[in-house]
Amino acid sequence: MSTMSGYLAMTRTEFRLFRREPFSVVFVLAFPLMMMVLLAAVFGNKQADAHKIQNGMLIWRGVTPANYYTAASVAVIVAALGLLILPINLASYRERGILRRFHASSVRASTLVSGQLTLALVTFVAGTVVLAIVAKLAYHAMWPQEVLGVVVALVAGTAAFGAIGLLLATVIRTSRSAQGIGLMLFFALWLISGTAPPRAVLPTSLRDIGGLLPLSHLVTAVQNPWFGFGWSGTDLAVLAAWAVAAGVPALWLFRWD
Image 1: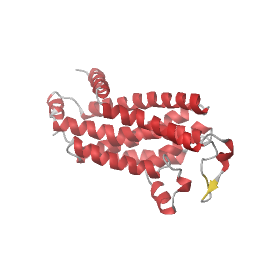
Image 2: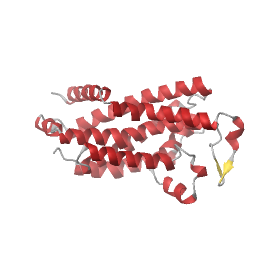
Image 3: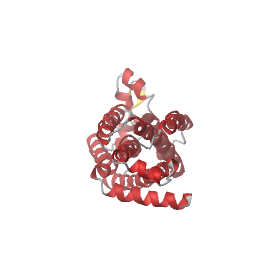
Image 4: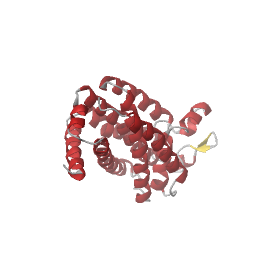
């Protein structure tokens, strides 16, 4: 089997498995959409709120709360894929001996990871479209102003969180453990990375911690071109650094059994 045909077969298999797993669908698509709708409903869509300042920062980054949460929720989809879906899937494959069978069939690790990342890319594109349409219809939120910048940010975020997810999958041996640890990490990042309360309203210590985390940088990297503020080179560089820092040891430590 050629590399390309193996990649296509693996990708088709991953999509079939994804559709059969309710947990994946809920956390990757339903949870970010639900929280975007709830948070936007709570804080509203008043233009006057766009210029509120706290702790020396614009709370909503110069846009309305509905616009803020629409773009931020897109980043949540990427984080869910990396912290939950990828490590849970790979840990489950290891438990059931699927990884050993892949290895015995001469499936390359790169083919397996490529299939998982393709699933992630297609899923967050679908989730982004749904979020944008719902936000537009419900709150008259803006469309992305610089689509290419948003795409680049999401690709960088997928690389970073994909590497983190692969690293988690190399050190977590069971799917149950992967689900528990992934949920803990996901909600911790969600609470202090600007995707739940804005970072401007957090205590200084939590703002400082959140500023070190990849989800905070992904939120800014997505929001800036979405709002028409231009590309965020610093945030993209940080995401690339996370991808390398997590990806290199993940590939080195990866085992088929």
